[in-house]
Image 1: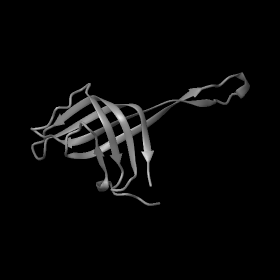
Image 2 (image 1 turned 45 degrees about the vertical axis):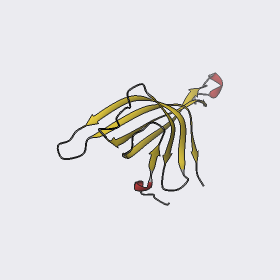
Image 3 (image 1 turned 90 degrees about the vertical axis):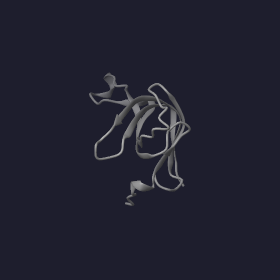
Image 4 (image 1 turned 60 degrees about the horizontal axis):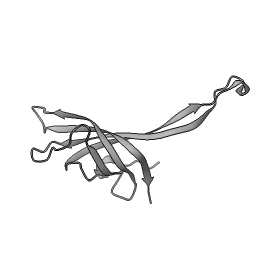
Length: 124
């Protein structure tokens, strides 16, 4: 097994501010139950709709904090390490923003979003 350090990752898109510190991506899929009498008491399923959500934490910048809840962000690229391994999503809607201002550290902003369309994994 080859573990990977997180410091080589990144997130880019057309609308996020610089200073991203971390990101989180959740790919989900529905399992639709198809159980009937012929399944002899064992549940059966087929694949349903797929989707994705995510979040990131950025250093809050006094000159660039234009994101707002409901904003559309485009061309998201989540890079795992400094290689070509990445997840790509075309569109997402900002569903939440949380700003933290600790006395002993930098002001940060957490941005959560709901993906629209596919999020595709590409790797070498």
